Amino acid sequence: MDSAPQQLIEPLDELMAALDSLTAMLDRRPDFGSMLQTVCAHAVQVVPRADVASITLIRDGAPNTVASTDRRAAEFDQEQYRVGDGPCLRAARTGRPQNAGPGSAAKQWPEFAAAAGHHGVTSFLSVPLTVDEEVSGALNLFCFGGDEFEDFEVKLLELYTATVVFGLRSARRYLHQDEPAS
Image (cartoon, rainbow, N blue to C red; front, side, top):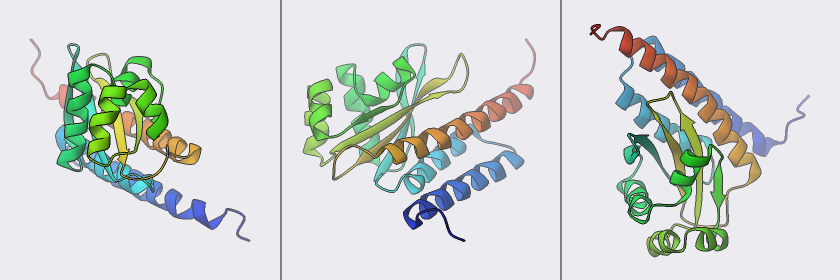
């Protein structure tokens, strides 16, 4: 008996594959940078309409793009850093997902949205990524066509990110365990 609509099965299968891959990474000696890059690649697979992804981390108050699937994603992040606001910075600051399509992005972040629009980006989805008191930021998705992301896509990314946070926390604890005591 198949009760789930078929359009839900494929994204959920992608989510399970991404989570399996993340778990396998944790079984090996984790490299934090490689994990972040893999998280970006998986996010694009998990959320059907996502074209590119990036991760913004904020350390000592300064945002930095630490991983991306495409140089354009890092450029979109840099534009947000330059103007001091945008979906990734807002998600990191508020702890709430930021989902914006062409109209709402232009109203919330006019300068950033105009710059991103010149590159064909129409939709943005950023969810908070809080690893610990030293490492926080956002996982960012960009779409080159269409309106804001669907509620289901937001929930998929939130679910994926919650699991990612658990994995990143575990990896950081493991990596800090090897550091010499001072």
